[in-house]
Image (cartoon, rainbow, N blue to C red):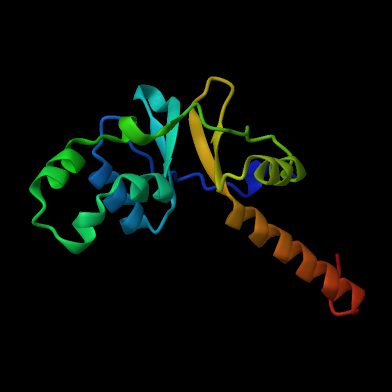
Length: 150
């Protein structure tokens, strides 16, 4: 089975000129932890994670919003300033087992899925793959117990 069967096709993304605050709000609104960064025509140029955003969010912002200098600095930060450029990617035809191995090798939580021209066509997270494995194992258990058919 190829990863295109599991990937999210309606990808929420952002441009490198977007503010970090806008990226955080977009991630929160969509309940996601990884935000592909795309240039015109959907070309993937980077990825930003919730960890990247937390890493540059001023501590004082959480505890003392009156710290103006930190707030101004944070307000000027763009996604392009903090993104991981040229992130690890997979293609739609990448086998699921290979994707699982790459998750283990790289330690990242999601791979943008790109076509041969580098255009973003989806995203697949560890959660997506784990969900598929659980479904597969559940079906296997049912067959072994005589409660289902293949």
